[in-house]
Amino acid sequence: MSHEHIAAAFDRDLERIQALVMKMGGLAEAALNDAAMALEARDGELAAQVRAGDATLDALEEEINVECARLIALRAPTAGDLRTILTVMKVAAALERCGDYAKNLAKRSLVLADLPRVEGAAGSIRRMARQVGQLLRDALDAYARRDADLAREVRARDEEVDQMYGALFREFVTHMMADPRLISPCLHLHFIAKNIERVGDHATGIAEQVIYLVSGMLPDEVRRKDEGATLGQPGRGV
Image 1: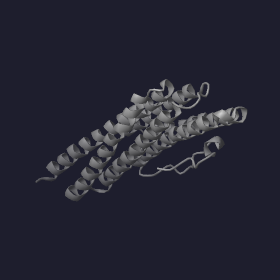
Image 2: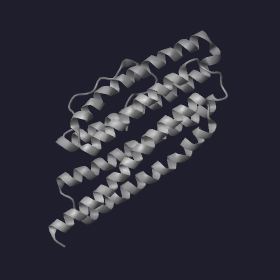
Image 3: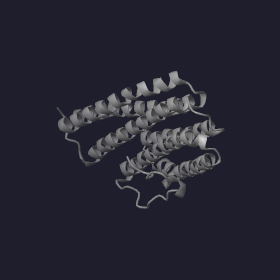
Image 4: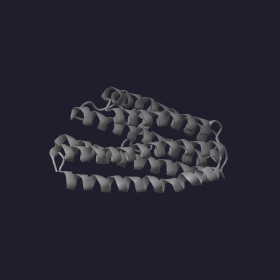
């Protein structure tokens, strides 16, 4: 087989794998938004659908990993192509974790359905989820278009998510101090907000992989985290 045919076959295989990544991204974003909607509406059926749908994301990540391993073994990619394959695998892993966080959100929303409402909290969580969903969508757009400038913008915008999380954390502490009956629901809501903030971190991680894919280098500067985002649990982790 000629070099041109081998290169064309590699491109087709890689294009199909990257289509699976984009499918994962759409499912992860939808899961996050649906889980937040289920929380606000106290919709147990929708929350259960989010939990069940996580298996599809897990299966897609496994398929992507298998296909990437096959591509490496059969095509012996050059340095640039190998970098692309490794980036694909890292992006898929980040999206799988985003699905896990959405599933955790859905689990806690089922528990919260039987606890006292915290006034305004579900709406704030929903707004944060929409913000993070847009961040994830833009990170995936940057990946699809190999747009390092958009990736850097995503990376900078994650600070807004950290600030939203910090504000929610302080709000929950205020509610717990004012009314001990709200301690349990506020703790669940705190962990939900933390899960959403972590999705924002993974969107940032995807953006950083785009920068690496385009330039061959990860960003040198350490992005500052809002102090509120460090309360309770560490802020980053893929």
